[in-house]
Image (tube, rainbow, N blue to C red):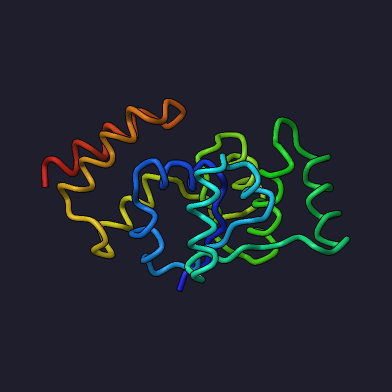
Amino acid sequence: MKIVINDANILIDIVKLELLEEFSNLNFELNTTDFVLEELNPDQNKVIQEFISSGKIQLITTNNIEDLQGINNLLESSSGLSFEDCSVWYYSKKMNCTLLTGDGKLRKTAKKDGIEVRGIIYILDQMLVQNQLTLEEAIEKIELLYTLNNRLPKNELIKRLELWKNK
């Protein structure tokens, strides 16, 4: 089972797309940090908390000086990243797992640090491969995503949409 750490933007998109159940059924060990949880709005937080309570998402709680210092060290050595961003970067590195994020600066920085980084398109691909979505549902969700999140790489979304429509 692949271990992944989720950044806030991934969780936000998954909640907006109403795909949390399908996401939690992927063959991944899903994790996020307590700091990321605090970034979510109250409604998103409530939904994610239900999945944490059920054990479908693991919450990494930072409660020791060593981890706080590690996050702070990354924060001080990077420019433009938030403490929350550095928390998921830190734990991805510490746990040697994949970071799921759509944040461009975080993606670039974590990749330079040798961390595998994936985004929402990868998650949708995995939902198809792992039979959590039909092709028609995936097309519907990626079209919705295209309208909901203007920070995503539009060219990649369009390419994936064309690929799926031509299957």
